[in-house]
Length: 240
Image: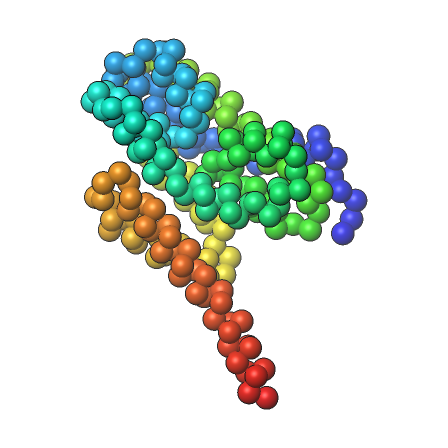
């Protein structure tokens, strides 16, 4: 198995591995900050969105609802629906962190994002996992800090960000960078294809429910591909 890496090195490697994904995260934060102040949200409250919620897609949905004077309860419910995918992330990483104390689990759960899950899940596939939670922490804090700074810059620039920059292209590129390293076999390829097609087809569903449906369908299809080889092997063993 080899000698476990020290916590400091794990932390720094986690932060380092997020650097390529920041090419998508930073423009996304700039856009959020600019849109928030354009929607009439005070700068301090706009920054508080990123500081406490720390969920890009949910924040974009929320500022639209706030600008439309939507009741607070409905805003909270909508954010919960948009972030339901994090339940799947938590289920995948849960077995790796269940031995940790609560002082570790709470901040790691708060720092869990799409980008953090992508790199951390790859880290947990390695044999040496003794201090992998430090890698998780480095990944999460790098993303959180970058999100705060990019939001702050977006608030400061406001409407002065030229539309010709077309920064919105960065988000789909970021998710492509997240998905591609995860597609390593037939189950993951099938899951990605089904989820991708359904996400486009169901994009018009209210409350972003199409995203959740596509995720669940992708997981189901990927699970079927995972189960079939095992079931076939068991049947062959039983017939002998």
